[in-house]
Amino acid sequence: MSTTASQSNPIGRWITPIWIILFATVLLASLMSDRFLSAPNLIAVLQQVVIAGIVALGMNVVLIGGHFDLSTGSIVMMSAVLSLLIGPTGFTGILAAVVLPVVAGVAIGILNGLAVYRAKANSIVATIGMQFVVLGGTLALVKGQHVRAEEIGPAFTAIAQARIAGIPLPVILFIGLTIAFSVLMSATVFGRHVYAIGGDGESSRRAGVNVNRTGAITFMISGGMAAISGVLIASLVGHVDPTAIGRYEFPALTAVVLGGTSLSGGVGRPADTAAAILALSVITNVMTILNHQYPLQLMVQGLLLTLAVAFYAWRQNKGGAQ
Image (cartoon, rainbow, N blue to C red; front, side, top):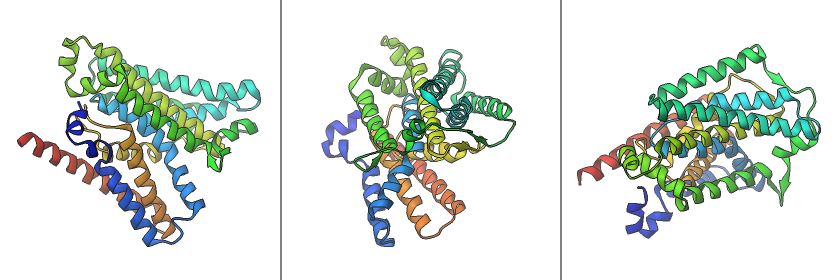
């Protein structure tokens, strides 16, 4: 379980390396640009984390359980497309445009979970395969074209654009989900079972944990979170390019790994994943302010992902050797 080391080091339980990285990143960004700490820009930084951040929270649960979900990008796009195709106008239309895509995302997550835990398929291969199935189905549905709703009700637009005390509603949603996932993973039987499965699935099975059911639920959660992100995209911009799957999936995966979630399972925290996506948003934001183009931003994210994987692998090997 991931809590062993933290119990012997109370400070380390709360201040993990990613929080130090986040603080250093904010400090460096504020020194590089006097525009960074302006209130509108800080709100923009928070808004930028929401879509990939919600995806990352779901992906984090799956990875703690010892598996990967690489189908999330296609679920995000599918959900956004379905929301817009349903036509989010009127109470019934808006309700359908929110609920049906999320139900579809949850269903895809369940299929992923059954393939991985029941059929014992490799999670990377299975979820990449599902990525192609969902993406192909979505592209066939819209004939590969951009999707734009002819009419969008103001209540649907308000989902992504409303503010409470000056803070965008999606930001509040992301903060709430981060707290909820932190409680779920640290203070519930389900959370303890997920950590146990990620640490040693066979021992967990012998101890009476329903590995198949618990594991399938982790994928269900991941699919649902990806679908929620898709609904937010539809609400925010009112149109979507269904081929842009990597725009949200790659930052989410980077954040999960950068936040310290073990690639072999059993270790990770939702709060650390949230801190990592914030750090990535700060980096992207300050690079945008300094007029660095998107390709360079992708290169930086890729470098961070590589360094994070190398660092945590080194730390794990070092710990195992002691």
